[in-house]
Image: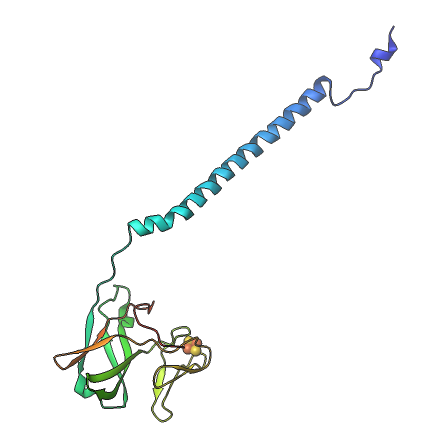
Length: 196
Ligand code: FES
């Protein structure tokens, strides 16, 4: 009897155990490979969308919003060198704006020049986080109650966290009425900026 063949130790490379091992190995690798393939496909799709979005935006860009003018009343009602609060119903309101569509704004009539009346119209929203600022005629400053932002009468930043001055808005005088360009709250992006 040839004992050397019978007593040879079993190895993982041979026999039924080895077959089972190989099967397990394939059974684990296949789902992993499939997952990686789907992951790569997903990443590629995300990258394709990210690259194509600017192009889509260019070809299907939304037309510029229409300018709307809001009357604030007779220009003469604003005395020279005084800052007054005016309120108006923002026509750019959305149905869910509610009472917040009633907007306050500061109007200051500057020295008239050869071109006619000069006005400074400032949004009442702080340039930091948008809290409504108050005007203090005694000190000639706008102050924000939220974090202590302070602005000069011109709207320029005086101190505190605001990174810049108050947002001025476009205005015009038509038939003796002061009108302002309706601001698109809350983005404020349609108002010009002052140097900070
Ligand atoms: Fe006015 Fe912060 S919101 S200082």
